[in-house]
Amino acid sequence: MGQFIARRVLLGIIALMLAMLIVFSLSRVKGDPRYFFIGEDSLGIDPAVWEEWGRRLNLDKPVPIQFALWMGDILTGDFGDSVTTQRRVLDIIREKAPNTIQLGIVAWLLGTFVGVPLGVFSATNRGNTLDYIFRGFALFGQSVPIFWLALVLIFVFAVNLGWLPSGTKGEGVAIRNFVLPAVTLAWFPAASYLRITRTAMLEILDSEFIKFARAKGVAQAPVRWKHAFRNAIIPPLTLSVFVLFGLLNGTIIIESVFAWPGLGRLAIDALWATDYPLLAGLTIIYGLAFVVMILSLDIIYAVLDPRIKYN
Amino acid sequence: MNAEQTAGVAVQSAPTQRQRLTLWYILRRWPILPVILIAILVTLGLGANWIAPNDPIDQSLPDRNARPLYQDDSPYLFGGDHVGRDVLSRVIHGARVSLSVMAVALSAGMLIGTGLGLWAGYAGGFVDEVIMRIVDIWMGFPFLLLALVAAIIFGASFSTIMVLMILVAWVSFPRNVRADVLVLKESNFVAFARISGASTTRILFRHIFPGTIGTITVISSLSVGNLILYEATLSFLGAGIPAPTPSWGNMVAEGRDYLQTAWWTSVIPGTALFLTVMALNFFGDWLRDRLDPRLRQLG
Image (cartoon, rainbow over all chains, first blue to last red; front, side):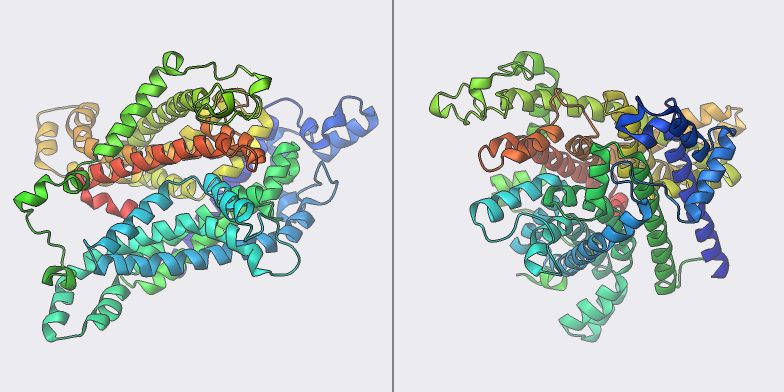
């Protein structure tokens, strides 16, 4: 077990370093990286400041050393300053992160508690009308572009009906403001959970031990929930890694549509303002979040399913 | 509800003569609607220059936000956008952009991914370990953000988005191709080929590769929809196909500011995108169930 976790941690570290390497090399492949750090006014800039920036980015040293020093800075939490606001990147991220995490958790819970039960229901009612409706919902959910779904929901519920606000989080935690972004964000995960739970349940319901339980005279509900569902839980759990990745990527899209003050919107603002340090910092933080998620789910997975071998 | 359904046992009773004839039965069994949709799409994409009624980039200020269905003397079937371009023509040309980007990314990704899968499965040992770990690492990469960084550095362009999509596309292939190779390379016909002196390349491409084609087809058909969505998402965010060229993603992005006054400028391209992806996913599911139900785990 210890060795298994150590291996996974090592893989995670390699993944992060690779992400950093890509972000770093992207800034060096196209001429002088100072342009990406100074921004718009880099043309008429004072030569002394220009030199000062060269020293700060270690441009006088060989490129591998530059990378090592840059990575060292990042490990100590120094992501540099945002070009547009001149504030420390880590401070901005720390300020906005809670909003994204709140939205992500709400959407994840929503997706899980809608998708998994519907999947079980769909499997136990295989072939009837409700099963078709739910499968239709799953196909719809996995195919609909969420940015477009967001716009349609805004158009219907905010512009036409005026029931819900079209965006922004507001002060505190107001449920009204969470409804549209969370529902849009949860749509895809709910559909994925539904499909995978349904497939897993159908497989389990067809197995010998379920037939045996039925032959023994166990009632319908315990067969479904105690015998079948518990054994069908591993595929949806495995899917959770991809769902969480999807949610993190989804926040980038959803937050920019709903003007949600989180990391995703920060990333889009950084894109439009060509704020390289901010976007680079966000990429590394998202990479870190991905790695931590994979790691924790691997461990949960190994604990829940003793059949997994640790090598 | 009959006994089989209550028991939840996966048995489908043979259809009666009457069931066979109903439209619903046929539509349920064969992906007719999706195939028609995909055929229309490919036709539109290939023939965009001849089919589109107007130039997709030509602006016409009097027709700004012209209403759809030729209402109020509007010259366009699907209305005009915020600078008076024909939404229908842009949707048709958008199909072309989506399809070409997807086709290039998918074929390159398929080549790379299949090659690596074959290599990993056949070579085994250290090579296998390295390739599979790269696949693991790749799955957990923040590609959307890396795409945004790339867009800042290189600017949004066709070649940038192409490279980004290839980087995303290849990773679906190696794992399942490798699993096939692991089974195939133990089979008798591979042993016989080896005894009769066939070279490794010959064994890989003449004897093992044909056995993986089913898997490759299924994975490709399941990735097509996602790749189109990925391109549209990047274009929507402003990191994909650059502005004057129509793409469904950037059309939705441009139309979103006019949601109150001209909903059609964003809703129509979005619907085209949605229907396309849905048809492709439906077809992919059907193909998977036909060719290789084991791949269900792909979700």
